[in-house]
Amino acid sequence: MDTGRRIGIALNPQIEIDGALVALALDLEVAEFRRLMEQGRISTLCERGVGEDAGLYRASFYYGDRRARLVVDASGTPVTDR
Image (cartoon, rainbow, N blue to C red; front, top):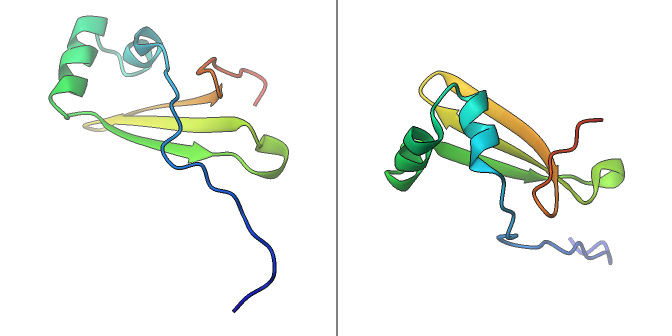
């Protein structure tokens, strides 16, 4: 079904988040967090905001039963008023 509207989707945006912030939220030392990331033992999910949240991203990091979730702008800077 063609609605005549197109939605632009940026695949694989390059967002870098300070690993120390994520390590702290997961209750890990930074070195351990980096090691676990390199080993692929920390899962990630990045969601792009739409509407009033356009330009923001929600990054979730999962390790075992722990979860860290940060809302950041396109430069990876945490947004605290969301």
